Length: 60
Image (tube, rainbow, N blue to C red; front, side, top):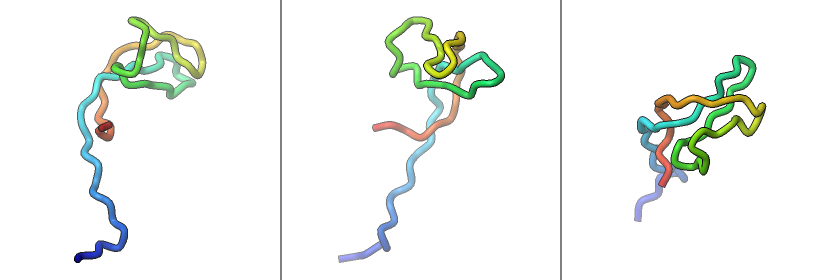
């Protein structure tokens, strides 16, 4: 049996569609497939959000 010092397999990064807050003071964003609204508002500052693509860790 091999031991790897509790090292875990690295997580793959993938391009993902996200909703991003348009407010300059807020850094809020959420994955598009976890949003229930067609045009969500930012859960942090209640501003509008726009679609963009980000490279984020893959969710399984």
